Length: 373
Image 1 (cartoon, one colour):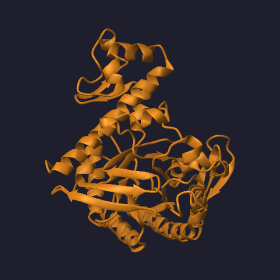
Image 2 (image 1 turned 90 degrees about the horizontal axis):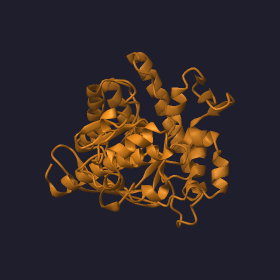
Image 3 (image 1 turned 90 degrees about the vertical axis):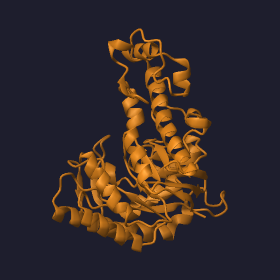
Image 4 (image 1 turned 60 degrees about the vertical axis):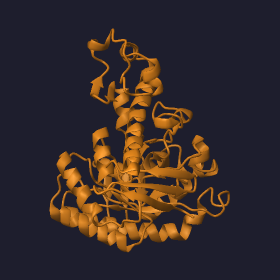
């Protein structure tokens, strides 16, 4: 078994309460996935990830980055170490992206053709080539529970013609990804140890900011009968109302009985809104990135812990939060850590922000389960 998705309840708003069963465990949905780019959620140890958030459930599933792990330490090294779970000592489910977005971000260092993408490493300038088949080989070696097809993320803004051309490439690459994955999926490092379980391969809907192209992309990918579908190419600079519209239009075209994942979003109120619309999975670097820069999320809005206003504030970051940071430390102490450049600042700020995100999803799941929404 690669994946089993079961829905418990669907609200009138479209929000869904369900469970996603994967080779490394079960995930309650809707779910937020912390981003562990290089096999590490920045500044937060794995043991802490397993405990933060409402009810001590912690992060149920995390995301790692194919492009970065391919460059360093290398996917073959990770394979020799028994796969990403064993390498980073994480026993819960995991997802890897395809590397497409990271390659897209290297706009001055890449060349796209029908075969794939040639790019130069941001680390040392060395030349590399990613095809759909190579992306699959790298992700199979890494061994996350969920892998993603290789796609192209179009720039914003882009014309309708340019977006449709890019979307066609994404569809062709999705079919190539699926074909190669199906032929090689038994090479996943834990295939025998988990009784012949394999990874699940998700498609990625593109189409830029054009509703008709989003519809076409979703329909083409659904024809490929993949076990789950992501909505990609959003949160790249477009207005929030456009993001919401593209998600809503795409959700209308995706199967009701398969998980739906919006990639790379967003602020806490955004992930709550999208979960209530019917999105099952989301990820974002924002909780840890903002934490490292002193921005903290609370039930009363965002606060910038760098401000002098907090120099003698003995209260917690958020009086309504029960995370380990809010139970123990004052705003004054967190401001001191940041102002002093103490590494502990990044740890505590990131832990609080992640707990806030995970608690947000815990609350939404509870409301969806009891019918209060």
